[in-house]
Image (cartoon, rainbow, N blue to C red):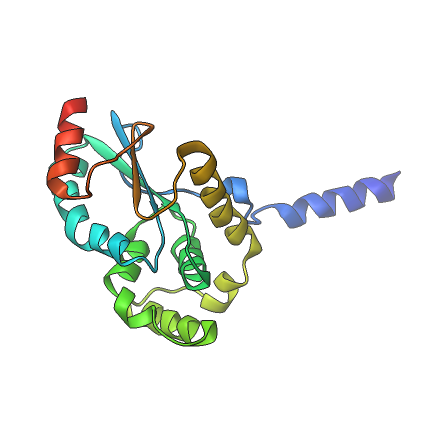
Length: 193
């Protein structure tokens, strides 16, 4: 009996601190308790998603995020293996910070090219090093817990919101159907304030 209890305690100890899908922090900009919550389903190889991050997000941040009116949670909807691996990197530190995600979109044209996934992974590794992010890309790429989390986001997107393209914006649980511009988002947000 003591031996069985000892084995059980060892198994518990080995699992402490282990990354599990339910413990992966969402990547969020803004106060998660804000009145208006926006979900962005995106793929890191999607050029329209990069346009959102590079062109629309800075205006949203200035006008609505920094003032505490909205929060944006970035959800995974990878369209290919390169996007899946880039998503793994964006979650790998598991700190909920969006800085690495924005860095990957800003540098998308550098890393999202190549004829093989190995070439793209090498480009991702270079982009991570250039940004001075201290993560082990090989370990992140091999992380099955992160992969499950990312793919579950995609499944949820289809089932719950009928997502079929990226980026797809959900504002307070309703799909945003207008063309994705700052002005259109601004109008939709202001109606909810």
